Length: 437
Image (cartoon, rainbow, N blue to C red; front, side):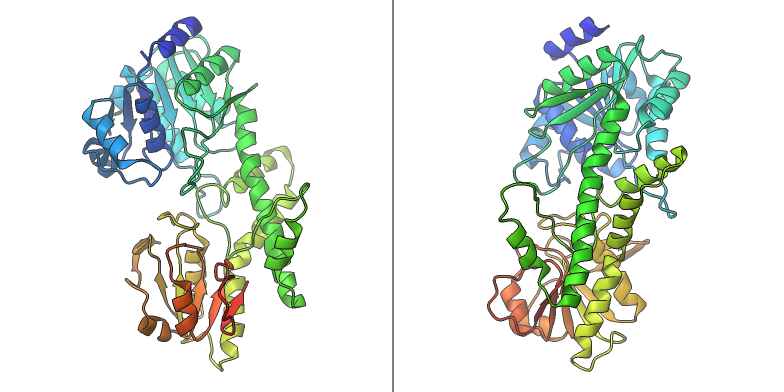
């Protein structure tokens, strides 16, 4: 089986399936098709399937013309019908792995997708989980479901592995194609074949590890590393504010050291599809072994509290103008979870807005990338344009995303007060009405 699949990869005879056409799945499907592999995208949302089949792109990291060309050439199609799984030789599972309302891992999308795949799985197929999850998911859950649902034997009839997605929306340098990949298969043969498949598509290195659990833990380490370091600077930001010290200047000074230090920056909290969530997966799994990840849990507590802290700081700013939070008009600028993207998944800005609403502030938002967002089933519409009259109408402007296409000089000129949680206004000379986190 190994030699047969390696030859099919070399000859571009592998047909690819990608389950989940979101921020991870669609770019991967496009790259597979661009590399010469006929690709089928699977998704339960018919709206996404229809858009793909019409050649209409909805993901920032995908080039519109690439998608249209590949669909037009018949190299990429999409469907909601999982029976087409029987036609593919390689399947990548790229579905969401969120947290539930109790901050517990929700792997229901992985489970349901795997069950659908198992119904139509055929011999000599390669299955790879890319969704971020706790160590053990691939072998304890996915392998079991595939074997039980298909009657096939992992390692003998099909190959299985884990290769964590590495997607950084808005990154101008690293995209799906040139970002290094980690691969861990169930057995050496599976690892070799899966690595060969990715090497045939991607420009980045492919790093092979000894098991899916290693690859799963590696992904958790990547994001927990960032979570902990951001938690550290957020805690220091709170302390520095009490001490009358600029945390931003402290970090710039520390960056002058050429070794042993990597800069992380404070902010209103954590957002995105990985960093705020992944540590919870590890903490949850660790309890199975009677182990408490105290450092990780401490950083999560700090980061989760930042939206509330930002509103507390906003209240102190308003107090100087003899204005209470209750009834204050507040404009939040930037609801994306990072600069220059239209993605607001887990955005701390939304939590900041919620905190202002709790104290009965009249809060609006402006984001040039996101005209509206949906939260808790409710659609919120933003201010369509920033003008001097709009800015003057608010008691406080809070910057929660460092977008580069916002006129911050206009904000400084007409705002009564500005709370800049991202230090994006650092180069503006007039600072009498600006306070930073």
